Length: 239
Image (cartoon, rainbow, N blue to C red; front, top):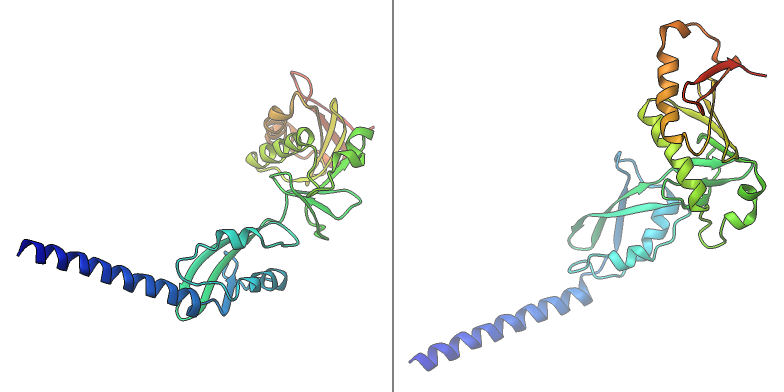
């Protein structure tokens, strides 16, 4: 009796295993992606350069598929993060795409650089400009041919400037990196802030204090420059 029960139990396991195998193989061959629906985080439709690339997912297995390998091979004209939102039977894949607009634009070019340091081509003229004036910064050696990644030392400094000024709710219009000793930051108020690589981390806080000081109310900032490279900031007329 015990032998029969044990045999029956094993038979059931084998049967269920076979059914699962058949179901898996069936979905691999029958349930494939035929329709890819893409939306942005704001629920707007994805632009064509994204949907065209996502169409390459058609024909892949819908179930038991994370699509991680497939989406990693997709090539977009600018950085895009892909998130699988839903798989809907029989053959529809819902995707959310997040577009990285970039952090800044390199002046006199159509090169946009993201916070991660990846540079791509785009005509977006609304981003703050970065002018690299020194010979070292402006050389082709500092923008690699592979993915056009800006040299990490300079990009990290630029990223720190943008992040620190954003924390102080100050908008940057343009950055002119003349050298490690002279970095000029033009704000949307037209005030020019002068800093260097050693004072980058504190430049935004000092600038915010000066702008909020009541004694400075009514000043024409478009005629001023603020030098924060010293222990005490120096506010002076532009030369």
